[in-house]
Length: 442
Image 1 (cartoon, helix red, strand yellow):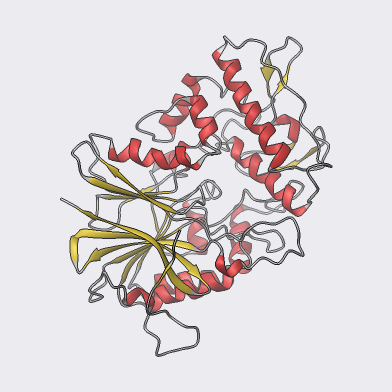
Image 2 (cartoon, rainbow, N blue to C red):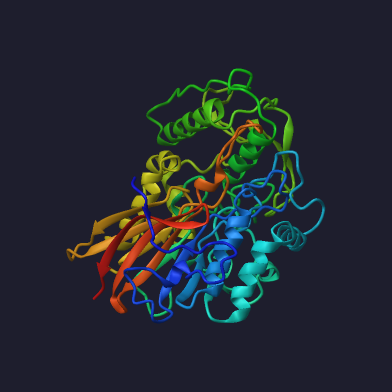
């Protein structure tokens, strides 16, 4: 993909530099009318294993550009701002404290970034909105307010406050959400863990805990512990077939993506969040053959019927349901999540939405669709600001040219019915335009 470098960039320590948000060629740059979307910051509470360390200084710089801009109207943080999922397995997430303590520690670990966001909020010139993601789905509104007092929180309301869809001011045709509600591994899972019926933590939570273990306590694929083989003995049974799909995905993950050297029967996954109190073994999550030959697992054994998935989708406020097996496989293929923008919004006869922005997959992109009325619709994914992961701590990775993506939605020459959606990368502190599309609203 070709990169287009903007003619004007905001250079560090140059007070006379023109703010890059105020010099976009497609805009009149005459008023506050620009919307900026970032997501998946993954600000951890311990920088020894946080997913975002190398990009923190650039993130602070980027946020200060927004703060000093004269033309940015809204900043939207589209989920996974904080992170209580990516915690090494043997670590107690709250260290015996509370979620509020965890938030305060996360703020302290990322103080400059939170200072920048809070500065924007206090200035009152740019509206700042937070949308929950899956890695921060358990944070209460009150605890988010500890980190960012006065921030606007977009939540679906009531018990489902772990979800949110945001429509920017005066633009009901724009919908911004994290996107995890369509993900089998990451959508809320109520009443499924016997010893913690109030928990909404889905299988993806344990995936993240194992992932942190895989990178903080690395091994090689050759030395990693291998999954026990599982056999599908009753392919005519839809539930068993779905469990075998689940097994196949976990086998791929554990054999080649999140490989670890632990004893899978050893209780190592310390929880103590989200209603969970036990310490689980990796084999508590993985499928296995029972004595009668059927496939089962200690956790989430009842998830694998279409009826259960439909119930979960309804609980997660999904309008148009997907097939369980397609959703499971789609959790590891971003195309499935991206396509939900088209299914849920653009092809929905009850929706007037023409622009959708997701995060979640960490794969920045722009796609165009056509709705049933023949009108162009735009989907964008806002990517991530997490570091590029590596198990080799001595590897030489230029993190300053990786990730750090953001999306802008800008009226073309002050025409509020004609919007440009653009995808940028903040490469070496400069705005690089990766691609853009325009849409005319009704």
